[in-house]
Length: 237
Length: 228
Image 1 (tube, rainbow over the protein chains, first blue to last red):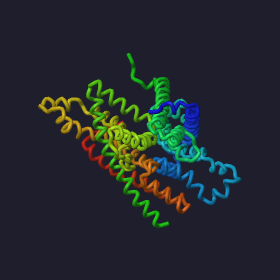
Image 2: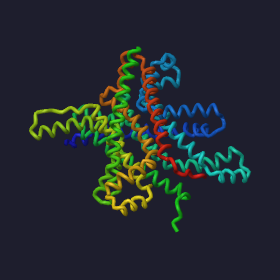
Image 3: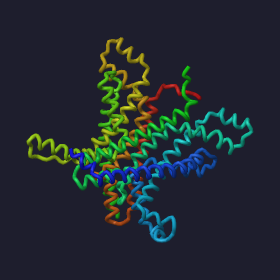
Image 4: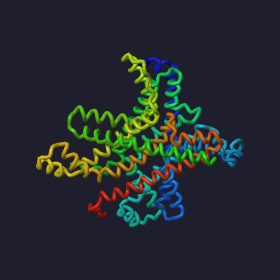
């Protein structure tokens, strides 16, 4: 084992840069994914059957195919379509399809949106009828009920499942390394492996970074569950 | 063009092979892990906890690269130290089956542990009262009953496992994702090939889901559904 190689300034910088990219990728795809998931969940539990069917089909496809295929499809596949090719040099949103970071971000956001939407929809469906009835009895209309009663409670109850999804997404960001020119933690490890032929040291260092990051995320969610879901925990006395 | 689709279709067989092989490894490790975590012996409990915590904290891809690249060098260094001249190359298929099995063994451990805990304690006590030993109790009483509790979690794990087999293409196993990438490079039409591969994965997960739900219904025969 030659751990000294990992701690050379250049390689430490490579990993440090990788951590920044991985976390940036994680949090931005979670943010975009969460907004999409909220919209999708409302459609899934809403009254418009054709839209519901469409979003249902979307989550089925996203959850039934590997993320790797989705990344390939967006990074390599879309670039083949002439419709996009004719636009990606000049017309605004399409210019981004040439950037690896944007493609990875898009794939991850769409993926996590599919999973999160189903979780949130499940929690909305399981809202106890009494809460909604009480809101109606207070004279709230449907929009107010949704915004002030159903969503705050459903989003809190999604938290335990969502914390799993966040850790899964952290691990999923390692797939960004299949896109050329992305230098996340896994790519940094692969580069060190390729340069020094030290697979154990390089990948163990990456594994340790992911492990620490996972623990931090889990700890954060435990803490917030303790605060936000305190009213659901069994009485202590 | 058409021949590429046929080749990818053949690669699907390898995907099925890797996933089923990994499933066998995962179930065996899962049962062993659950038994260790529930054994009450501090050393085994600690070992089981370390296994499930560490594996579930590291991305599949990183573990796979570690086993494939690290394992090859590690084994060869070991052989060299033992004075052997031979060198071993870990096959991508074996590396895939072992790594995916090892990873999902950790998830199975938690599923099986939860399932065993769900079985009423009286069942095991009755078996001991009948004079059954621990292995016999496990095989005849615990195992058949835990299937019912373990199946929902097992179905989830299996679907995730199927999807993670796509990662084996990155260590060079020529399953359908790998072949789709090759076909894309050769014909310069990646969109259609990745779409096709995605559809094949979708069919595979969908068939599994339908079959396992049938199995679940069968194992839940005679249970009372809670009426809310």
